[in-house]
Amino acid sequence: MIVDAHGHVTAPAQMYEYQAKLIARRSPFTGPALADELIEGSLKKHLRLLDGVGTDVQFISPRPYTMAHSLFSDGVVRVWTEYVNDLIHRQVQMSSGRLRAVAGLPQFRTTSLEPAVEELRRCVGMGFVGCLLNPDPMEGEGPPPPGLGDEYWYPLYAALSELGVPALIHSASCSSPRESYSLHFVNEESIAVMSLLGSRVFDDFPDLTLVVAHGGGAIPYQAGRFRAGTLKAGKEDFLDRLRRLYYDTCLYSAEGLELLFKVIGPQNCLFGTETPGTGSAADPRTGRSLDDLKPVIDSLSVLTDDDRRQVYEGNARKLYPHAFDRPSPAEPGVAGGAPTREG
Figure 1: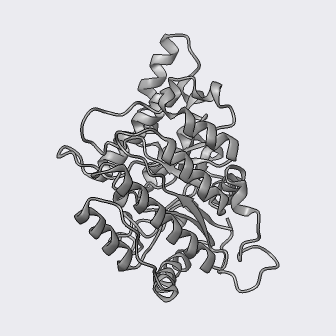
Figure 2: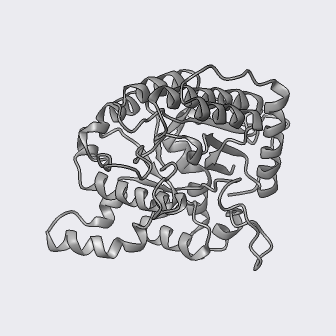
Figure 3: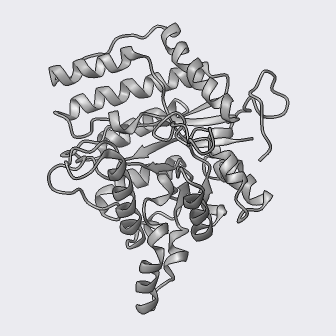
């Protein structure tokens, strides 16, 4: 089975029309009911893309750059997040086992994490298997938020540990003129890794599971610099500390993926593509979309067949056990499933 642990919802235009009205009004109001046929239309397009690259199951969450954590009011952010999560829930129910739901959280730049914890509990109660965690709800504006090693985040870590679901560390949009949102992803995920590994978080929450999007930002590429610091100080080797976290494979080059597997190890990497998303662009050298990552990973000599099975399925099963409480259409004994490719 091929499990893509990093995907985002494909939604009808009416959902984003509601967002535009929320932004225009700057105050919360109830969103429109979306007809099943509208949701199914978007779903069919999405599943056709997954079929084209041989993905059997994908975890979907809100599109991060639309989450609007820094806009206007916490009330707007909350109703928008709940609306998107409810749509994801409906789409997962319609997907015949192909999709799993990952919640967005209504994080807001000037409020506590209480609304985020409440929404996490609501979504897990509906069957969601994890959540996104934005390390910068300021979205590049104003004073920086506390690093993920700070106790500000502890209420959310406690809830994640209690509920037994992971968080995918994934930044959202960015208002800074110095960064595009894609660069902001890399920068914030790098800061998140360093803050967590320099903290007591995993001592205080030994059952906490965190996955870092986009291959850990810049950290695997710069691991030697940080390793030198730990060796000079006589501390735990930085490479060992890196493996307290998990990382997805949303890196759109063979060179980047090979480095990730060499530095982190396949036992801490989950297959993720974001299909359809930023990497959905045709590579003129291969004719394939850049986010068609399975052929790239298959071509890497640094991995064994057992390594690939871990990356494609085994690690997702280990970290997201609730995602596999029921059979998927790709599993034996379930008719009408997607065509599977061997991992």
